[in-house]
Image 1: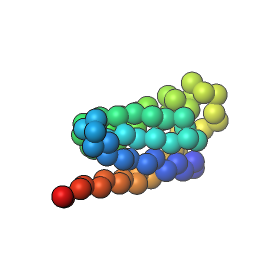
Image 2: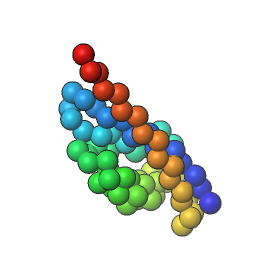
Image 3: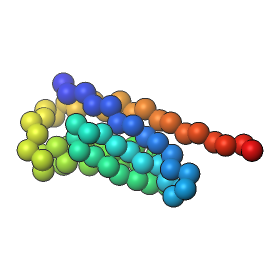
Image 4: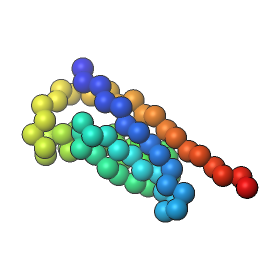
Length: 72
C-alpha cells in the first residue's frame, strides 16, 4: 500500500480549491471541494504512471484541507 497526503487549499483570490502533492507531482484546481477530491482520485494513478513512479494498485490518499476566511 502506498500512502500520499494531498493538501487542499482555498484560493480566495481565484475562487477555487487547489490540490497539491509534491510526491505525486500533482496540481489541480476546482470550484468545488468534492469535485476536486474526485479529480485527484482519478488523476493520481495516471500522473504517477506518466512520471515513471512505481505504484501499486492500492493507493491511499489522505486529504488535508485548509481554508481561512477574513471577516473584517
